[in-house]
Image (tube, rainbow, N blue to C red; front, side):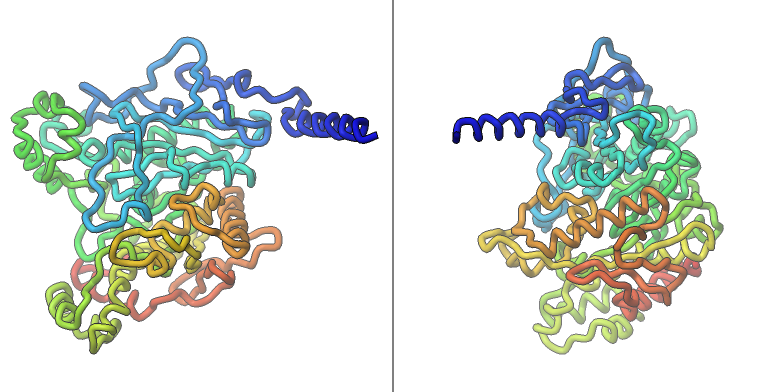
Length: 541
């Protein structure tokens, strides 16, 4: 009797697994036989693929940027024979130095394999057929323009693919290999500019998506560019770059934008001067000598500017001016920041004496106004506000200003969020020697694993609970809805109001999810005044 029962149960389970692992046509799914034609040749799905989510790794979207192609615009993909079978991600681009004083495990995960041959992307898709036309989401990763790769666990596309998106992650060149400007490089360029190679890499990946994503069930006419931190800095430039016109149709900006916060964006002339110093420091008297240096020597070099450059071609002008003139792509925007963005970064001050001297040195005639916004009369008061100026002046003010400027166009819709979930931590977990993990709160970059539905792939791992999973389910649903329609609302989600100006609410996403007035307004208003005076021109709204 028991034997018959177990035989029946085993047969039932086998039948269930056969159905679950079969494709839409009922044939058992085989990653080895899942072959797609893309620019350059054919690729097979990675071994981890299932009929539910298919994964394609390490597909080239440009030629290796090595030799004469170092510091050149991405060249066309080199064709290959046969079928590329990649069960592993490609090497990441060579990494720069982690900014001094920052905890590694909280913001930046190590990339084991690094190479100059790194211009590859990855696709996750739940589409069974090329004709499905699912919304496409392309991630531009963060990392201070120095670190990161599309292969990091926090960026996995499986969580969003399970909700109906076709997800693409990419590598782009970093540090001096991604941003070095130099008069010689500008002279050899057909457009007499240099330095924005990381931006050109992202544009090349967007072009690859236009040519190839339909084969993975994605809709090339519905592409969302989503990004965080330095990735958002790059993406905000793409919002105004003529080279990115019609390559994406919606934009998600998390915790940064390339707005001039107190000083104009770096120009080509300034970046070329920094690049000349860089070459001198390396002992390179010409481009041939520069290109003869190893990538390790290049990445360890000092004196070059690292970041997007106003070159007149890729980035035509200062971003605030382009916003004020309406010279941006008309796409819906979802933008916001976290409650504790500044906690991983150096404190403004730790003593009352340091507070007074730093305020005077940094804000000059605005020091009294600064102190009114961040009052302190003791060392303990200073410690209580120590990480707020970094949050407000940079990670909050830039998205806040981009949201206001975008809404002022009165064209595509704007949606503003404020993420304030403070998760639990393992008792023995440390991010650095100075602070217990609980002090970091809703820190810079935390929102990603919620929005991207990647709690189980987060680094570092945490003891997520039912509240975290409820937040991640809602946040990722909002994101996929936005990618699908340009509006995050849908289903039984809490209504997310459109942002039409400074008096509009943001959607607070945390233990509770509800609209409320944008936070930190006295601080944000202070930085409006300070930056307006420093720039000598009105803000773009």
